[in-house]
Length: 43
Image 1 (cartoon, rainbow, N blue to C red):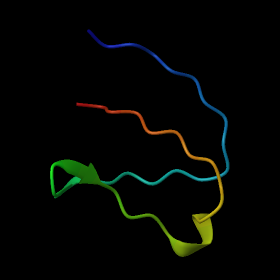
Image 2 (image 1 turned 90 degrees about the vertical axis):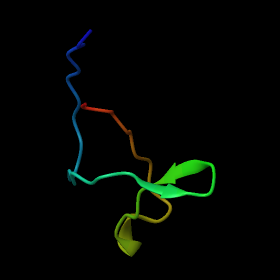
Image 3 (image 1 turned 30 degrees about the vertical axis):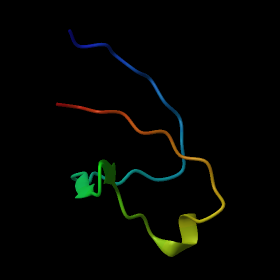
Image 4 (image 1 turned 120 degrees about the vertical axis):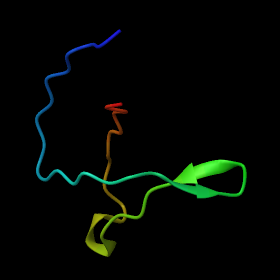
């Protein structure tokens, strides 16, 4: 089931989650460190 989200923010980056041990990882730009992010799975 798809759900619609409406979000306001500063920037958006689309990435693929990579495997990291027994979890997943997404690398973001270093200037995003210390800022809040929201992650939405789109597929």
